[in-house]
Length: 154
Image (cartoon, rainbow, N blue to C red):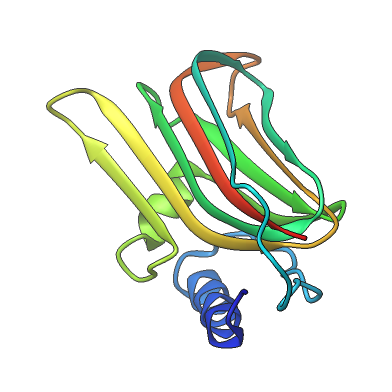
């Protein structure tokens, strides 16, 4: 069951993040399943992935609990679509600039290891979700690791 207050918190966080950092959040899914049983979790991981690439295609309704991306470069955009509509379309740097103000994104630069670590939390979706990464300023790039974890409602 997806609590109503959790959905409202996410909506407020997205609006606040737009005002604070100019992150392009085009729309928020309005028809997220709020009742019903949760099926098995959806989990997908990958290592050393060439981008542009689609890293997850999820069917149904639910919530993306977590997206982790680790890379030696911050030169990429993440796009999340729900039901064919773009929900999030922004770069690591834009998310980094708002990460201290919102609790749905954590963007960290690990200078010691030379890594950029991005984590997004609790993104609701309806009618399926597609998560993709694309390079900025170059035709191809590479990320070191990704993990997507979602709960799909029955």
